Amino acid sequence: MANNSSIDSNEYGQILGTITSLCENSKISAISIYWQIGKHISEAAGRYSGKNEYASHLIRKLSEDLSAQYGRGFSATNLKNMRAFSRQWAHDKITPQIDWSNYVTLLTVENPKQRNILEQRIIRESLTNYQLRSIIEAERVSGIHTSAQGYTAPQLAVTRGSLYTYKTAAVPQSGTLAVDCGFSIYRTIHVKNSGAIQSGLVQTGKKASGYTVLDAAGSEHNLYFYRAYIHNIIDADTIHAVIDCGFDTTVRLKLRLRGIDAPELGTAEGERAAAYVKKRLARCPVIGIKTWKNDKYGRYLADIFYLADETDAQGIISRGAYLNQELLDAGLALKA
Image 1 (cartoon, helix red, strand yellow):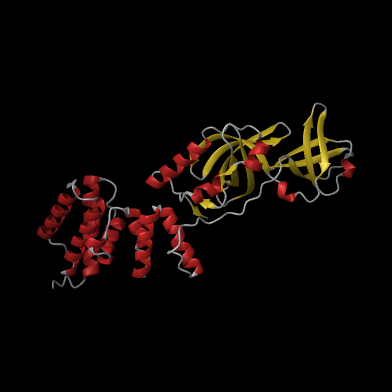
Image 2: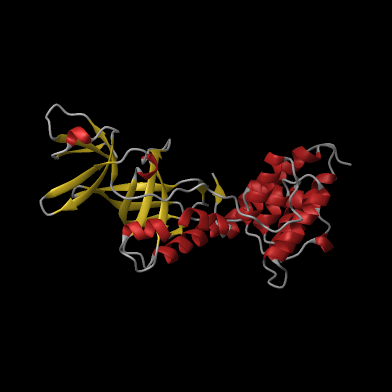
């Protein structure tokens, strides 16, 4: 066994040539190619006493050359995953029915028996990578292996309320109310019965001569529901929306879907998730939203409700599909 980790140029040339031939063989599945690349790296490293150090040098150099020749797919991290892949699975046990992203996720499961159960579920239930990761995370948190069961998406608690319920603030003039429309927007309205508003919550309605205002004690669950219009869809969990705050006031904001984390654009899963959202909202001139305090990035969090071809925002909020949960159910997002 060699006792140094320097890379022999002749040996490296042979390894690179073998891997190049594999990559250009259209008759071999991508999964098989990745396994064989990992096997060649492991075998080359195994001839050295400092095999892990040698493997790191080899992987770094292969990443540079293969990325220059083929572009994406040959980062050092991915080559390390290929090496681990070839060491965890026998070649006759791998299958193109499981895609590479799922195999990489399975590498995080140390128990071979549990990993095998998950493989069977991926094939049987056509699990997406996000569904698989959700299952593994749920098992990690609970300590209970649920993999023999069918996929069950995590559930979000959701409230469906009424439009045009607001908090109020006291103002000096009798017959006047300051209404908190949300998003740091306040409107002052004149009402005859301002003294009757005791709870600090009001339900409003518009009429020709102004606004009707009723005390809405006990209606905190109805706060921050709005009629909204989609300006554009940024990705699966972020949209720009024009929000009707009431009192002839609108605001355009970036909204992050509450409770979920969808994959980033630029990845296959991110593009698929974004396409799903665009298809769902394509025929929605109006949506209903429930907003929450903004997140650490300054975005407001929102629950999104929709009904195709519907313009009645209250009906959409009451009866519409709940987009956040649908993304979890489809395996296109993780619970945040």
